[in-house]
Image (cartoon, rainbow, N blue to C red; front, side, top):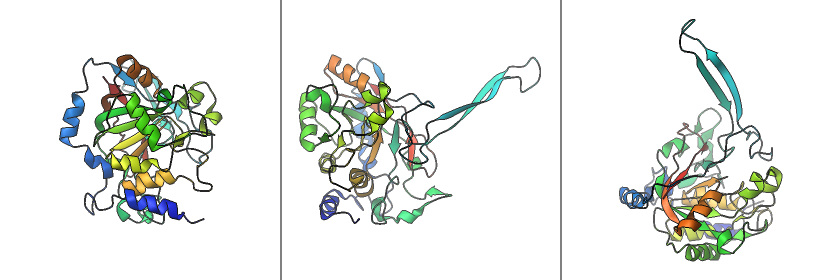
Length: 308
């Protein structure tokens, strides 16, 4: 089914192709300048650190909904082995097989395509079985450190968790910014809390994935207008699921990643962060969310940390 005119209209308004040159591969991460990082460092006042990643484990978030995206399979390959001979120091070693987007992760700009194109107009065929992403793989984003802003949509509405049919709108984002008394600036990394991760933490991985609140197809225009560098939230699908427009699957992915060139993250645990922001009445912080630089990968696990 072809993408509707409504989608293409939004795509034209948020498109960043050529904004940073025809050879650009990192999109809105260009907005994270040295000056932006210096200003972000000034957010650190107490040194309080809040981890935002889920535990990597075999019984993790993935339920089989997405083929091939397996939870981490952890195997010991050495256990107290004296590899240099009897009486020498013994080593233990292990290996993991997992989907790179299995738990808390970043989507690379090549994670989705539409109409045969990737970010900056490159052909979708540049993602191949053996080489992965020829352009804009996650290894092209070597550092992601900037000012982080929590837009706690659930708290702003006075609830622990948004209902499963709630599409987070630009008006919701404005309300959450006002609630947190924070202004989103160019180069910021925005974290949107719905509270949905609570369902997974309570042991219901199927209920966590469906139905799920998430970002509306209208939100990319808000992120574009604010020159946001990257966005992450606390849901499996990032956008509302099932979709708000019937049979229009993953339109926010396509608008963010393909049209705007903006990284997005999913399965971030924002519960402790929400508590910390409420206790300190500060909804901005230094955010370190370094990607694992897998060459040509369309995503990466990440262990983000907010520092106050």
